[in-house]
Image: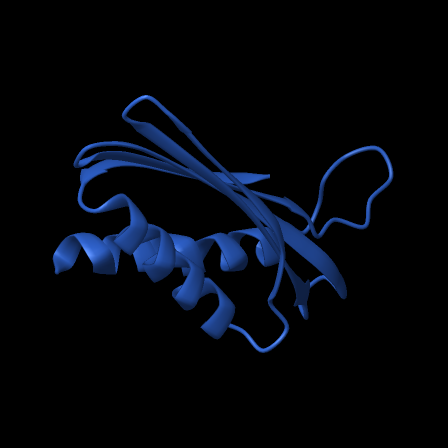
Length: 113
């Protein structure tokens, strides 16, 4: 498992679309699996799940992205899972780290704008 979290300022809907586009265009094998959106008062939350084939591990890797926003205050959490072929412990997490890098680069490029 690999994880990335960041607090930042921005527009919730814009960042959500930004990340989605970067993830789905970042690799030929990426698929958008499902998502969930909720607004409670002034707070918005979106959960997105993506999956892709990992050449390094010869298997599929998933990434869960959660975006929470209250006005311009945003928090993003991305966690990858899968990619290991071991039974009792994890080895070969290169696929997870590579997939997570798509999200990290997306968020960092958004903050640079």
